[in-house]
Image 1 (cartoon, one colour):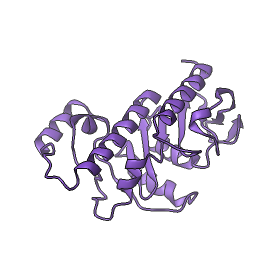
Image 2 (cartoon, rainbow, N blue to C red):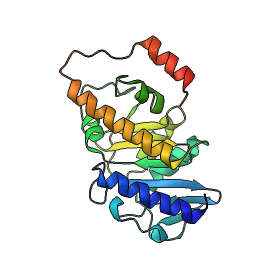
Image 3 (tube, rainbow, N blue to C red):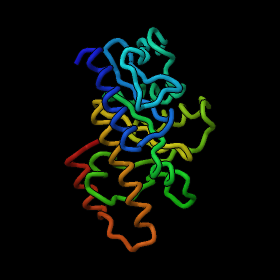
Image 4 (cartoon, rainbow, N blue to C red):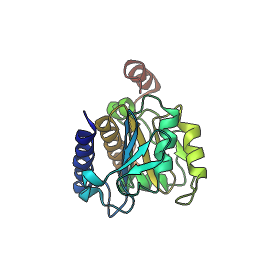
Length: 210
């Protein structure tokens, strides 16, 4: 896939995410790794109205070289890429159910969501909670970087998920699986629930390493 095709793919999947209510207003951002840098959605833009030609391009050192100004959360994306050489794309959303879970007081910060389904374990695995930092605080990048080497998905407290994938579609699908699992978790939190056992989780992680 060449750069122009990648730009079109970003716009197409961003609109799909927006149209299905997984992000709102100008929230959420997407990036894709290129051979010579990165493409990133732009600051203040709606995911439902991405112009492929105006997507920001950064060089290999993270400098903005063309397109509109990149998302102000660029540092989150670069932190994931720095720790995950296999990451080809990163998706960050403020999706409703994931954000709701990130605000709960009694979740396990080492692994926020229980293993409700096999597909969640396969696509996300363990999901750590990154402590709260104000928007734009560069200490947030440090906190994400500390977790990214062991986890391709993290949940920012009172903020939302950041998910890396080998490809853009992998990252989008994993983010959607996370959001759906968060929704299920909220639906089931007052119901006696049968989660996957430790043995079942271990077998899935061995067969489908993230």
